[in-house]
Length: 234
Ligand code: ADP
Ligand code: ADP
Image (cartoon, rainbow, N blue to C red; front, side, top):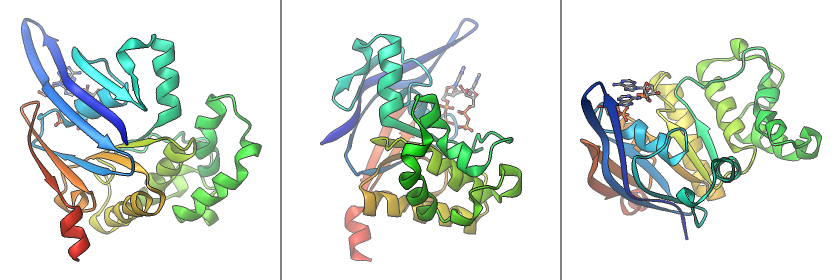
């Protein structure tokens, strides 16, 4: 089943009199449980694609279909609600609130959604265990390593059980060993929990954890490579 798709997606930035075609007709279908890595040179449109898929920015043309619903047909409010229910976001620089504990940061999306954290204690504990932070739940971000902070941000992205996890350079700020641990975690989420993941990365070692790699160049898909066959031979 297709969870998220983009059809002829375009984004034009107007800078003075110049138009930058950041995305120039990108079509992409992501199936449930699939782990897709988006690679490409700096300026090729990777972040723009992820931002459009996650609704952080508006496309200049084309369509996005999320959970079977064409986003362009919705009001802003309906689109926001659809995304809040279906998308989790992980950023390079974690974006955790410094005054809240790890646990409070993770619960924040539920609170914003008007839910009672108490009703979700079991899911919180399961997630803490999965990301290996059960004994760090009461620590503030400043008391956690970079890898731990990224794992908090991962748990925060997953607490609402989103259909799709979008990750923008999730290992970009981590040393290679810690980055690899985060990538192993993403791989496990994809394999064990059938979590759909779309991740932007510069790092071929990170992309090697994905099922499919999509290469962007000048705002277009230049090439797609399936890694599922390669991985099952290992
Ligand atoms: P990547 O993530 O692959 O480095 P981006 O999606 O950030 O690429 O950028 C694609 C192109 O769009 C680049 O030429 C970039 O300079 C331009 N761009 C991105 N965001 C903006 C913006 N907010 N305003 C103007 N130009 C932008
Ligand atoms: P990263 O590569 O860390 O993901 P982004 O490419 O997303 O960073 O850029 C960070 C922010 O800067 C985004 O909000 C993006 O829209 C903006 N941006 C990127 N390139 C440009 C540009 N050429 N002009 C103006 N804003 C830009």
